[in-house]
Length: 558
Image 1 (tube, rainbow, N blue to C red):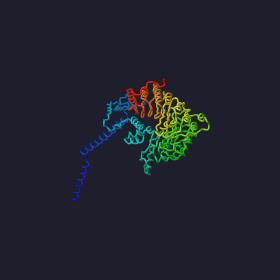
Image 2 (tube, one colour):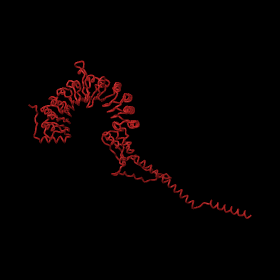
Image 3 (cartoon, rainbow, N blue to C red):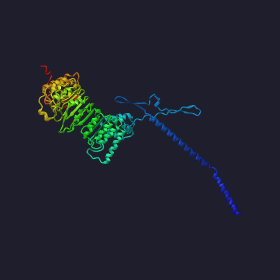
Image 4 (tube, rainbow, N blue to C red):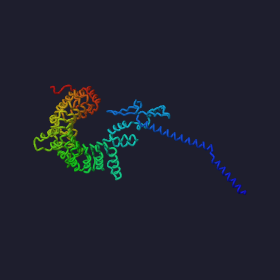
């Protein structure tokens, strides 16, 4: 009985304790409510902060300026005070439950904080248009590579600006990955190809002019990739490159439909590849430059008519070349290239073929559009007055004539040319090996009288004209002061006198280059090169103070 009573008591006590535990404790309940309230407030604050951040981001995304591009400048106009409300942030208007509008004070727009003098983030705050314009100036001076590749690693904004396609229209690639003459291992060759692939696919979308210099490997690969992915390519230059095979010319023929200019100077390539390309696609080529090589008759191939639209033709050799004779049939070339405007044979000795008929030159159409002829040489040449006339008899538009080193050309031959508006005449003799064989030349005054109203540059250095001839020539140039076209004059090694020089300088205000070196008839302290109108004016003052060799009359008045 006692045991059962004790068990009953224990059960009652246990039930009472359980009831006490189940009854709510007012202290714990209040703590729970406070915790829940704090959590709700934190969530509300977070949501408010997120909304503010989103509002600020939207507000910052709208630019506070407008960029207008002019002819030679970019104008940045602030739009923060613009009456146009479309670009100004306006807070939303809240509504009460009853439907009445509740006015909310507008948040003040944060002022634009000016950059501090030593703030390094100024480049990140520039408008993209301004940054692109700055990059364009540098690219015009130094080229796109490697400048744009380097500035693209500065920050995200600079990378976007450096990727602008207009900056990559002209690209020249030289020794960018390897040192000159260093051999390329397979890993480096693979990296070069990957980099070139990335450039062509992501940067060269508007490439027009591409140049490759001093490449000894991967030349075929570079030409193939550029011709495939650069549909706007119009000019290709390969200078001092080796390893160019026929496959590269085949790729140009298949993909380079916009190609107009081809420069292969000092580059070794398979001759058959070039001739096949010109034979199939020469009609689209307007400019071509190449270096003369023995046993490679490229000029005769062009004379067959494969390039009827050719406007510029240049053939050259190195200064130390031993075999520089080039066979030229002028009549065939005139018939094959009637649109030729520029014809240059630099440091080569043209050997003109004789025609079957005695009047073969007169039967050809000539070069009616020719504006520039250059036959300058550093060694020797056989060209004379008759051959020069065969080239230029039908070229009334000629503006530039370069005959440096052509010792067999005379003043009478130049005076007989049908060119009435010549602007640049280069007729100097620079090489001491021929100085002893030159005979006294005459007729310079007739040339200056003929072209005094159009001449801009005149170079007659080391020409053996007499003192009277030079004085008369300067007189005719001085009398053309109403046109005032003369800009450059080279009288080095001539018999110019102080009086004739004073008369010329006093009448020509546009002259900014004057070479008087090695002029033995001038006083000491005067025989040097003068650059700029300020130095030439100082020379005039010095000559006026001098009492030697005064020339104040026309030598032909007698």
